[in-house]
Length: 282
Image 1: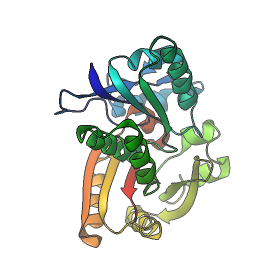
Image 2: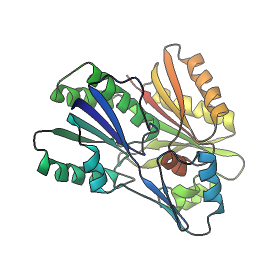
Image 3: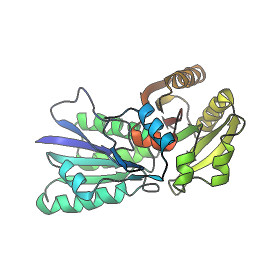
Image 4: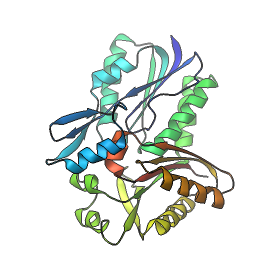
């Protein structure tokens, strides 16, 4: 049995983690996307270009669906300590499902420590939280030390979105319809941030990519970013991600930026060419 297992859902962009020690395990529980009559399990079997094409061709409503409590409960097996990170409870029922899965699991495994973290976020910021948990697990901290350290770290992470389309957020009631219509006009980019209710709000509007990048950098600065880790996720938009990474490193000499593609779920909400950045703050 492993000492630690780190579990996440489709809110993170990680599907596997390489080079873990024999004391640490990682597991992934996918959400699902409903497009017309097709159910897509977000397990990496289709790429985001294909997903975007399906969304553009969709004739009916689309939606996302969280994993079942049983799916979570089965994933908790095999470790002494289990840490679970879920997509923000402000946008998804995944957190509640993970908690119900914990109740089911603990009936048969009362000696296993399980903690469910509502990330209050997605994508890049969740990636940072998972990396921190894995780092602590490899350092062989105790369970309560892990929770204290993660809670402290979470107080010093943030998220920002740069979006070229918000059609799915509008359809699902996450963004105001009028704001959604604006983004298609005059090459507008929207800079999204986390609200106190752990949902998405529009903080800035910028015309064109260059001004959009600058708005992202200013948002990061205003929240206390002075250099450190940035997890930059993109929706089939590697070139823009590279340009933004270069700008971050030019302005913040101590920046450490990693780039990865979003999960299908994060692609569904950030949409074509969207960028999502999780970053550390002081």
